[in-house]
Amino acid sequence: MTLFERGTALGGQVALWAKAPSRQELAQVSRWLVDRLAETDARIRLSTEATASLLRAEGFEAVVVATGSRGLRHGWTPLRPERWSGPPLPGADQPHVLSYIDYLRDEPALGHGVVVVDALGGRQGAVVAEVLASKGHAVEFVTQLGQASPDLASSRDWGKVHGMLKRMGVRFTVDAEPTAIGPDWIELRDVYTGAVERRTEVHGVVLMLGASAEDGLFHDLLPDRARGLELRLVGDAMAPRRASDAIREGEIAAREI
Image 1: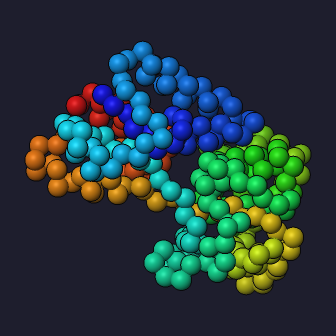
Image 2 (image 1 turned 60 degrees about the horizontal axis):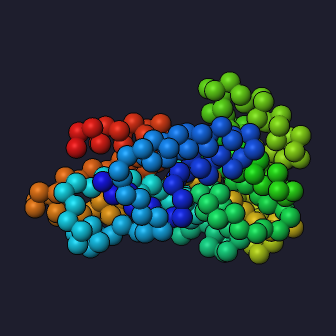
């Protein structure tokens, strides 16, 4: 068996979430899996992107595509579904505007003031806000929802997480969506009244607007099924979801192969 990893280390998005000081235990998930992998005869090829031509040249009989997902930056939200294929959020293409996946993966240098924009309501926004605040940034958490990260109520740590973020200096703005981003500002619109306010001294914007499956390799290999290739699609490459879904689907695919 051969495992191709485009990056320099294994762990995927689980390793990204573990960058938050309060989520360090997540690193144990990927570490345990890597340790188990080391007990096998699997060949691990880091810093290598698996392409259809490479896989064909090496003659694999089965391929499990687990290429993950990429964070959205074009401004799509449930309030603005037209941005999926229409005009994007003005200013979203600037270098200081990042998806949450890009920020956690690369951790680029940003100026002091950073706005975190969350339309998902999950843990992503809290994780990014914590990482930024722990580095000394002045963080404003903006969400179109009535409260920040409401999904944390299901894990019963909503109060704990938000108390921690407030003690770190994170400010919360609810019922607001971005309408435009400039070089050092962002405009926010109240979703109920339509009133627009401009925040200045904004040196970075991190967007939690969802993710899109990186399934190009799977579609490139689909014609090979007719020639006998056993092809599976798992995890976020099928549809962005939880780490537990990716682990379960990867195990099922391996057992069936």
